[in-house]
Length: 144
Image 1 (tube, rainbow, N blue to C red):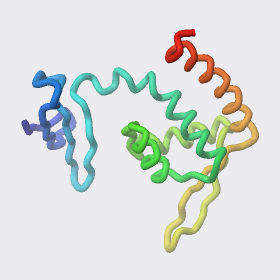
Image 2 (image 1 turned 30 degrees about the vertical axis):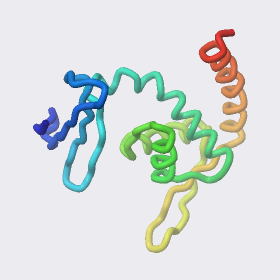
Image 3 (image 1 turned 90 degrees about the vertical axis):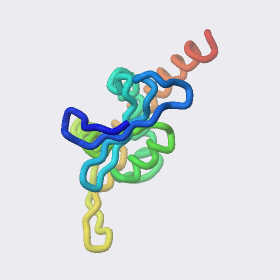
Image 4 (image 1 turned 45 degrees about the vertical axis):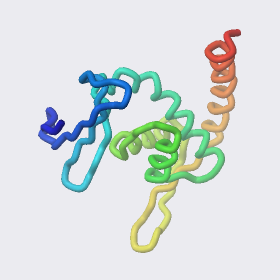
């Protein structure tokens, strides 16, 4: 199935193996040279639930080592989060504004790359969040 979405982007959809209803189509939006995947069955419905997990994931990696935007897009994709740079960069800026991350610019060939590291405040916040996540995990997974 092909067509245009509300933004006028070309949309190509194929049926999920498990369903042939409209909600069971996987779609790709094509605009210039950018491609983004969507699932028709209300893709925004679960995003609010995952936004905190994504922030914690970013903070976790920033504690472990310096991170940069595209690297985090790829890392999050490995874990099943489809997040665009247009969503991730404001999230990084927000975490920096709140004091959880600090950025520096590093030269990468001819271009500059903004690299983020966790601040002491970010490390403390992540430690507190781990306790909450552990408690939630016990309730959700272990039923305790």
